[in-house]
Image (tube, rainbow, N blue to C red; front, side):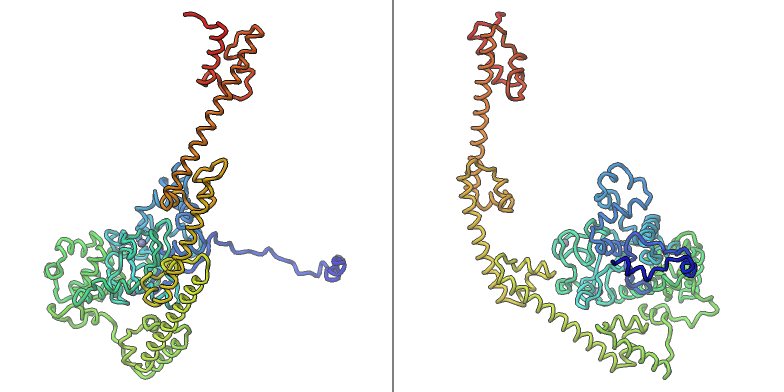
Length: 598
Ligand SMILES: [Zn+2]
Ligand SMILES: [Zn+2]
């Protein structure tokens, strides 16, 4: 019936068929093997790192990084050491075994980074992944001491992203060895997990952004972080200046069309030194503390500087490192009025930033964009507004105090509400546990929500106290039931092995031993005795069977040889290797006087 109905719509005669449009072969764009996941923050100072992107990609596919690497990435890296027998047999272990020491290089610009990005490009079909590494700056910076060997992170950043519901990721800037502070929070980067006190690797097998891969602790605890000694005064100024420079460098990566040339860099350095207050290389080397030979080599293009050296040169020559690398240093004749060499250095940064000329039209435009950004929900933090408008926060607050105040207050209010909602959820969770027959402990609840036990107890002292009592009571009841079960097991017939009993209880036998040693020893002893008895019974039955067969053979006038007896034995035993069987046979022969005399 259905077919008949459908038939009305299907033209059958050939004339109608000719009227149908001719379908040309559709070209279906090829699909990526893995999720075409967008990297975070390209074109900003907080662009994601390739290592961090990999762990987010693994999480998006609900596999560990070890699996993603072993099965998908490693085969595309085209390296012999990733294709040996061991790597083929245990793909999950390739990352931890063969690639572990190379992992930091992924965020750099060497061969490893290049082939890794190439592999990710093949898998995700994304063309923008090279900006997640230092690849755009190859040729202008030395690879030495560029990437730090262990992970570093800003707990306050993690906490802020978590509270505002933004994705948790690992910015590339945290991978650079020269960066030691977070300039957004003016705090030192952490390099050890606050919970297990260990250093964390790049590309760990079970890496997950924002978490310790060793103990699974949440790393965004700015409260713990606040207790650390913070940099101050000149050090902080210097660090934050370096941070700003690196920020600009990372920000401009997508705008650089070709790889920087070492010759361009050499002439930039040379020009900037000559146009600085020091005029010549010797004076510059003395003042900056860079060895004179290094300065000479750099000016002649014989070597490329480490990022830290490049920062020093930029600092003392009062230029930006991005200008040095791209070659935007003007010729000496065009250089502006020189400042005195002994004036305080950090001001040099301000001299390097472009000077804005304000007019009403421009102010109106910025105000309008600012107001548009204020409409966005959830509200943006000032740091993001500042980045999007591309003006320093101080400028925005002085030019638009009303909007600035509104932005700050709005975001503060939003964060406050989010926090309150979060803790309301925690309270509900604690209350649910109170009603449960198998409740979680306060520590377990704290672990699940990613906060410390102390933080939870501090916020809900009474509720936590009641939950602890409830949990202890339920725990006692639980162990009471286990005890009864074990005591009943002592009466089992046949007796069971302790491991089998533990399996029935869904507990480990070691935990049973720890809690009920006496009963466990009794169960084990009873089981051993049972095994002994079985062995004795088996021996007896074998002995009597062999004797019976041998006697019957003798009575038939046949010699009871091992072979003859073996043919008639009911069990598949090798008589020659059984001491009991041979003994029994010997006894029968002895009784019948069949023993050969030596
Ligand atoms: Zn931070
Ligand atoms: Zn840890």
